[in-house]
Every structure is written in C-alpha cells, then in structure tokens.
Length: 118
Length: 115
Image (cartoon, rainbow over all chains, first blue to last red; front, side):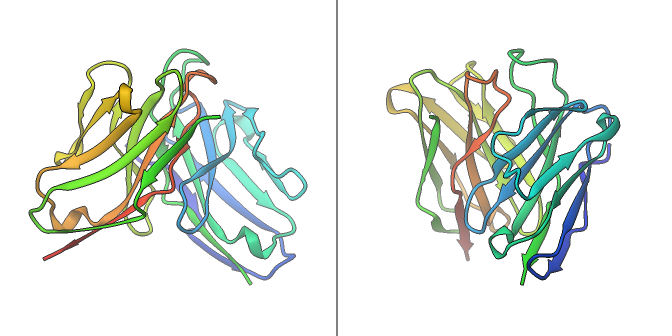
C-alpha cells in the first residue's frame, strides 16, 4: 500500500512569491490533515478535512494561507504571499475516520515539504 | 487547553544503554497518548499508542511506554539502545474534546546514540 505522497519535497522561493504544496493521501482515507512543523518544534495542525469539508481550520492563517480538497482526495495548500517566517516543513497526513466521537483513527504522515523563503 | 511537555530537547546514550524519554501531559481527563519517531527528511511514524486499555504499551522496535495517571506521564523506554534509534521523538495527545480527532504534539526530543 502506497503511503501519503507529497510534492515537492523541497521548495526555495523569495519572499512575497506564491507557493503551493500538493498531497495525495492513502487510498480510502477520507480524512486529510495539513501540519506546520517549525524547526525544533512538533507539528501543529493547520487544517483538517473530512472528505471535501474543512471541519477544523481554526489555526490556518487565512490572510495568506488557503487550502482545498476537491473531490475529497488530493489536497493543495497555498501561501500567497510567502513571508520569511513561513520557512518550515509542511506535513500532510491522512486517516480513515468514521465520524467525530468514534475514537482515534491513526494518522499516517507523508515525508513533508521543506519550504525556504529567502 | 491541552499541552504536552517533553523534558529534554536532546538526550544522548551509549549503544546498549537504557533509553528514557520523558513526556508529561496536562489534562483532567486522560487523553489518548502517542509516541512518534521522525528520521531525517522523513515523515512521522507511529511507535505506540495508549487508548485507555493496558497502561503498559508495547510498540515497534522494542520501545514501550507506561501511562501513569497519578503522574500525568507517558515516558518512553527501550532497554538497550541501538545506533538506528537515533532520531527525533515526539509525544502527542489526542484529547477527548474534539472526539480524539486532534493531535497535539510536544516539542520533541532528539536522541543521539554513540558507540
């Protein structure tokens, strides 16, 4: 079974430029997560999708960040414009969930996209 | 709000020595608890999880952790370190609030294993 796929693996851009990250979850996983991992810190949730619906985007900086998950499969996370402080690793994870309150569903993580903003 | 504290951002052990990585959580209601490992340039891999069953949890690669409610702790141990254990380790909680759908991570502990 293929794991969570992310691309690109590395991205270097200049500040104020736009950037997009792509994630393909494990087949059959209806829940998709985007995390931000700053250097020396643990991942922090940015947004969680249940199928096509963003059910938790409270930590997503909506002035410059946006995400979409068309058709409930692949997802794209975009930053426009990028700032120096956005340099970090962006992780995507997926799980097979059966609705809120139904217990924990193991999240499987992709390798991440390392973004460097110059 | 839930939080996770990992004591020691860096831990160094000799090969064959005991590994002990500390994790404490803050919650009046025991959450689900997890340990993840991250190798360089890779995603996170689940080592083990506590979901209110046995308090001593065994995971992959010889690791285990014990849930202690009285101490609000979930420390990770391995009797004998191997060079391949060198990595970053993250403790995480999934609180009851939110239906266990959210993971809150600690800052991580980098484990170094020397010959």
